Image (cartoon, rainbow, N blue to C red; front, side, top):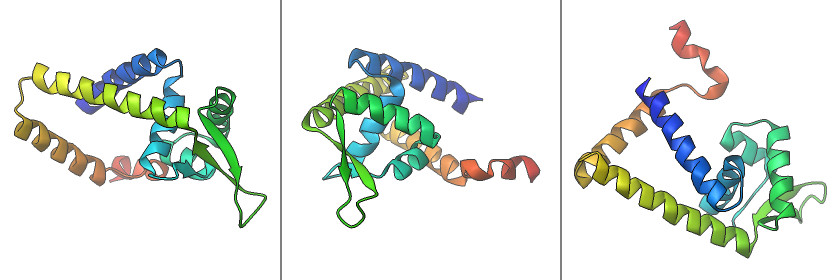
Length: 147
């Protein structure tokens, strides 16, 4: 339940950050996911919806909105002209970088506000990574219930 509560608070913070940049939180997640890909900051829509755990329809809606505001563009794959990838534009890269800086500022405030040292905060992070690694993938979430 604490993880659920932390997630809720995190999503509220992410929604506020997204709104400050004029995008929805789901759209911000797309931009951040593309930015994490490294140059050329591109991914196939299928990879995006799988990574973000949303439907293909939801990712299409997000991409359409981001294309409209020129934060991403669709590029045809050279090997298969029926396929395309989503690529961050320079404006999308800047927005993602600015959002990452805002997120980092929030994490620094959180770390100071909860009174944990940097080492303690890193330890909490390491434990959360282990917990998450032990959780079933979303396609098999019943595994924990069935066991």
